[in-house]
Image 1 (tube, one colour):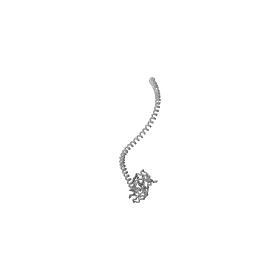
Image 2: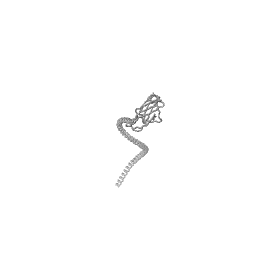
Image 3: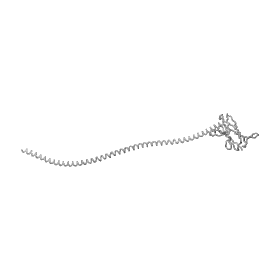
Image 4: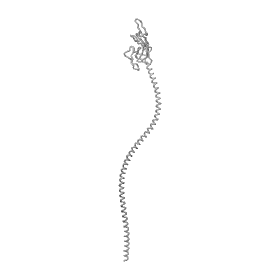
Length: 283
């Protein structure tokens, strides 16, 4: 019986001890639970605060994202502009290099130009010298041609005008010096050629020019002066045939009304060329 009582006492002591332990532990748990509730409240408030801050941050992030998009767009635009400017600068750089190459080539060409200029100056001097020689040769050729043409042509020599006066019932008188008495003028001369003169027919024209400068007894037609094309009237004309031999020529010019005092010019043209001239003075 005592053993059971001791056992019950021990059990009761153990139960009491456990109860005391549970009571102390329960109080502590309640205290801890209360602390935990307080911490929960604080954490809830902090969580709400953090949520509010999160929402604020999200709004700020949204604004920042918009700003970032705007900045990205602006950056892309600026980047495109920079790329365009860079491309332009690259083109300008290529153009600058091309210009530099052209300048280099131009400088080289300028040097070559100076050399060519010197060569041109020397060639110009040679050309001027050659041109002068050619001009001299042309002048000599022209003189030679003229001399050949002259040598091929006919010449008149020994012009001799003889005035005549026919008295009434008396013999003829010649070499009359008084103009009013001259009834006729006989003009004689010789025509000769050179070994270069070609044979053939020629026209010989006589021009007697009175003191006033007019052609005596001017013909209705005219002949052409060689090389100038000028037309001249004449006093008398004859066609001859030149065969290589000297030809004597005579022109008789009648003066029915006599002549005027003064100096008379006598010109002989053969085929339009003046070959000889003379004078006759009358009182």
